[in-house]
Image (tube, rainbow over all chains, first blue to last red; front, top):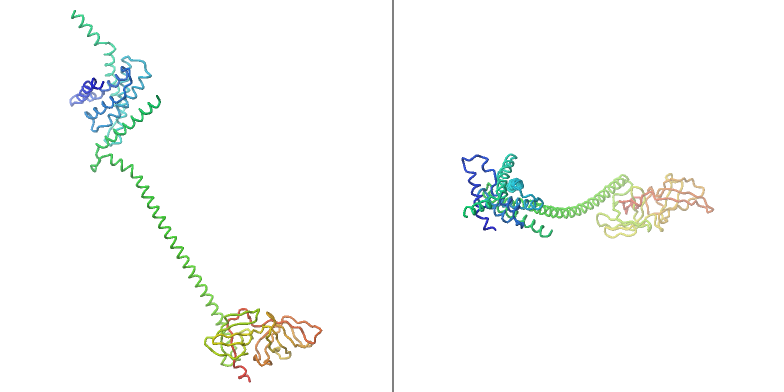
Length: 166
Length: 270
């Protein structure tokens, strides 16, 4: 599973880094694009994966975006654990659920990351507006992905191609 | 299931702690050392503080024990010095009292010859009626030489050896001294009776009252005349031709410190 998801995760991380490029709007870097992977793992995976994958995502996040490696692993694994627990009690798998899980993941990642960085004295700042923006954008991003799966666009595309080939 | 969940939580927490430590290792403090080292120092500082305080406490206790030992030793030494000072004070008081007695004796010294010898009482047994006195120098005092003090007659010398001289007090069972009233109208013989005296051979018709001080009359040939010897404390008439008279020595034999030995009185008086 890890090898199958490695490239897409790296792609989302690269996209996340691109969103922070100078010239783009300030809010462009607010959504947490890799959050969709832990949301998908919670909502679509039948088995409950141990948050090792989220841990690796977090470490990769640190490597790509953060000054130190470690707090990201804590934050992302904590969020993955929470989402796995939440998925056990929430039966909804609609795009709204994806969006809600995305909001939850964003809030958890942001808060836990802030808490993990706090003792390091790196001057991390956190505001409610920033948390809100991140949550909204990440929820929207995850909701879009959920909508993509709900509309079954890949299957429709494959069906459409099959008809044309006939 | 619960055990597995607990194990998962524990492993996750340990993993988070490891990650936080790794992150702290990457962060440098102002002096360039990893932040995790300052965390370690912060963790160990209370331990070191407590250890230091414990060491200080042990040192204080040790010093306190040493000080206590020194105080005990000093206290013991001070007690000894205090006892020595008290003893010296007693001796000085004794010497002072002896000097007073000697001055009183010197006031009456005109009664005696210049050969009177001052002696210090070092031991007395009132029940046995004996006393040991010591002179400043070795001197041979003749037997039966009278011994007097400021209060009156003490006794007579029964043995003399170097500086040590033994007296027979007038309260001795075998002691006797001729006495008379100050007006010389009544005469008698004071006899020792252990701690008290009795006056014998006083006729029934003699006019004698209690509290009368009897002086030595010199009639016994041992004691010089005119020395206060006994004070009458009890007079009783009996069927005998003489009064039964009880008396006490005028000299305070219990606290006498200095006596004058009078080896030459008879020559001067004679």
